[in-house]
Amino acid sequence: MSNKDVRVEEDTLGPVEIPAKALWGPQTERSRNNFPTGQFMPLPIIKALLQIKKAAAQANAEEGALSRIKVI
Image (cartoon, rainbow, N blue to C red):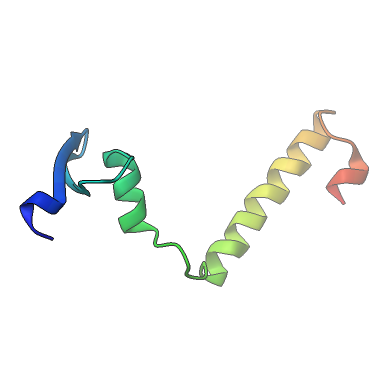
């Protein structure tokens, strides 16, 4: 991109180039660069997220914050 096609904004991580017409800021641009949309998430990541969700549901069920039926 040429200089007039982008603007430079800063966040806590430093400067980042953003398309000039974009309606978002530096944090969103970093996310767009780090996590491209339209691609499948790797299976190990999905499995890890499922383990986390299951553990949270079990902990909430033990504390009475979630019915046992929803956990199973």
